Amino acid sequence: MRRRRQSPFPIIVAIVLTVALAVSLLANWSLVKTGEFTLPGSSNPILAAPKKEAPAPPREDLVAVYVPARDLPAFHQVTLKDFFRDDGTPSVIKLPKEAMAGSSSLLATGDSIGRVLRREKVKNRAFHPTDFFPAGTQPGLTAGVPQGMVGRWVDCEKVHGLEGLAMGDTIALTASSTVEPLLPEGLTDEERVNFLMQFRLQGLDRQAEVRRVVTFGLVVQPPVPRVDENGKKTGMNCFLALDPIEAIDLTAALQVGDQVQAITQSGQAEAGRVDLQDIVADDPLIPVNDRPRPAEVEQIEGASRRTQQVPRGQAPGR
Image (cartoon, rainbow, N blue to C red; front, top):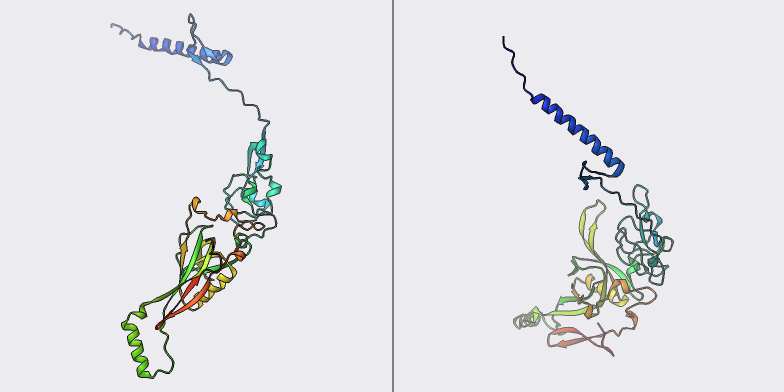
């Protein structure tokens, strides 16, 4: 019986695998020892291990600064807890030493605690002196009320035009009401009916009295939801800073049911827009008590009457 000849393929595969394994071991050994692998008879390496860069030496001009671990609202009093995350780790960033020196420098942690914020502070940002009201300012919305002014919550359903306003926006408030006929005295019932009929025929019953009750108002807290004891939303409220006398005028207008409308002033820089961040307790930007107030004069024309504001002395600047 004739023997079948064996194929040389398995032997060839075994030789190739053996050579590959030897080259692999040699390459690994060469990479570990020299960082590169070069074939015999060749001057250029065909493999090279990635070079590890030496760690940069620590910068001596950087200092660690504690920063807020979460966003902080305006008028908030900074506490030590604000610098720690929920897991108890401190929130720290490194800044150049130059940032902590000089009159315009950032504040150290100890200088920030107990101070009241002028504006919202974003987390992981170092404090600056301009972020705060003067030392001793009480926290809360009253911190945003300039000297000489008073704060008042208003119902946005009773004062129209407050929606969409932001902190620091300046407004004026007008109150309007329907003009009531001024009846002469001593009229009989028939004469009274005829008088009112002529009043309506002449269109005098469609007149309105409009007066300005607030010359300058400052938005301290933009409209926020108002909720009842059950947590149900019942409307929107807005907190305004007003002249003390004008606050009384506004209360009176709301009490008698006048339609009160907010008129916004320009927010452009060249228009002299008032920024709440620039109003400080010891240096009020607007001397409200010194501002000339217009006098109200009642004018009677026929069967109608209206109130007009006439400047007293120098006209208000706003």
